[in-house]
Image (cartoon, rainbow, N blue to C red; front, side, top):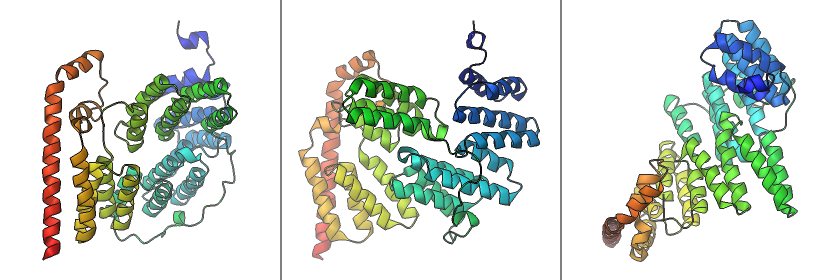
Length: 414
């Protein structure tokens, strides 16, 4: 017996079914109509109305689609997915589309702090839907104010810069002041309410209650809007770590990595969840990307600040020290480059083979593989080969660092 036969008016089941049938609008439409009438929270009813609007638009009923989106925004005036749907529907009417894009920018500012950067990145896409690059850049700038190492925001910013390198600052209506939404209810974020409950319980040392909030948060994270889901999974990992439940933290980390296993936030949590593992992926890979992006945006000050933040976290990270040395040389500051070159050399001199096990990292983390017990045994049997390559890597790094330092010293003596 299907879930709908057991509970024919279950809103969540109906929403899930509509999403499965999304590319078959004729079949999905009846279920969407049932979903908007099903008992649910205002935010989930808004999701149902938005899905109904998308189906109506696909079927050519623009007037009904606009009415459905209006109902969605009446229920949840700060729902970013509904606002994006409205902007797309009104693209031919630029003033109306930009007004809703500005409303989305305001809504992003009201998002919980832990996912506000993602909200601003999402709103940048809304502005790009109507080719408003200044509005997109403003939204991305706000994301970078929250997290200057936000690689996705930097990548989108660079795309805008390449398409419009001479874009003056804040040159569109969207880049000026946003006014408060005049209609719709501002719905509190349901995940934020659970997060706050978790923090209160933990502060009061009611750990069983805190664990219950963490369970509910983790279950609800799967239903979060797409733009918010990665941060919801990230926060779920942090909750279980705070509770000392490593097993559930690992389950949550798996869900996080399924969203984006190469994200910097995933890397940092991976180190916390698996502190006993080999060194694993280093910050240098990400920092090099950030430096390159900042440089292409003509922001060497921001690039240097990113390197300094990374070295504050990991002062002996060989990858970061290498990038900083190269960066100082590119700026024609050999005295400063020498300081970092010597730190790089010292880091290699004290590194042991266990610190250099990049084969394990490359075959697992970056490939996104889940390692079985059989594969772990295979790696153990290959341990001699792995250690031998780690030693070779250390010697090669040591030799290169010595050559770099010698070249800088020789240049300074001229």
